[in-house]
Image (cartoon, rainbow, N blue to C red; front, top):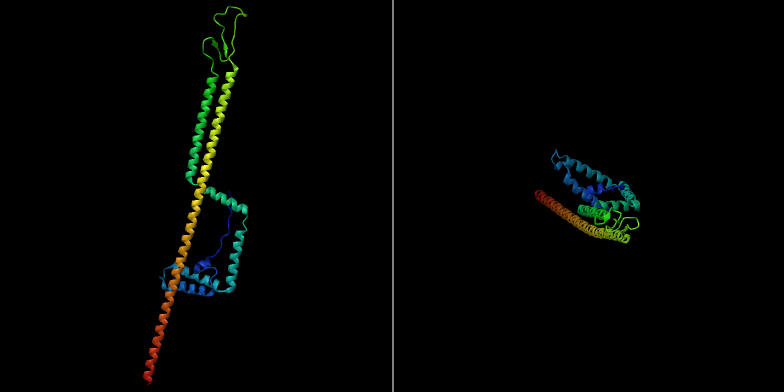
Length: 273
């Protein structure tokens, strides 16, 4: 089945600066300063190529997102890509969903299905052998006294006298043979109906198991999504706390500088006095 290739939404600039698409200029600037200080090549080893590449990506993202015109064009390209994703036809999406669901069928169900089919085939083969045996037994020539051949005709009675008028032949009853065929046919139909019901019941059980497993997978995916959201919020909280600590260090540094300037000014006034 041919899959539908959906366009990929490009959010690498926002991801590089670790911000949301709805971030303001102040948030962009704040995130850029934090990442630039973290990945600046002067604070890394000269042989750390990863830091240089990361710093270059941060600069490129800041150049695009800090410019209103460039950012508007970039956001417009993202919105057009999203509209292109939404324009995928319903039939293609449904076909892809069905294909993925079929691909997600557990191997245990496939193995159980194979074992069930193999068992049914063995039973059908046994039934065919039994039917052949019954047919051969039914058509077997009579071997009792006074019989000859398989046509069901009796030989002349040993007490009969010679002559065509005194020789008597007895034909085997046709009703008994017809009844045997009808009984064999009914038995065969009952067996087929039984196997058909078993297959239908097995399919119902398998579909219920698959439905239960898909529901369990959906719940697991939802739980994983909640965990990812929780980790993302925790990460944002850590970043916010780090930013607050950085601002506190910056305020303390500025306060120390003002104190040093005031101390220097007092000393200069004393010397002048």
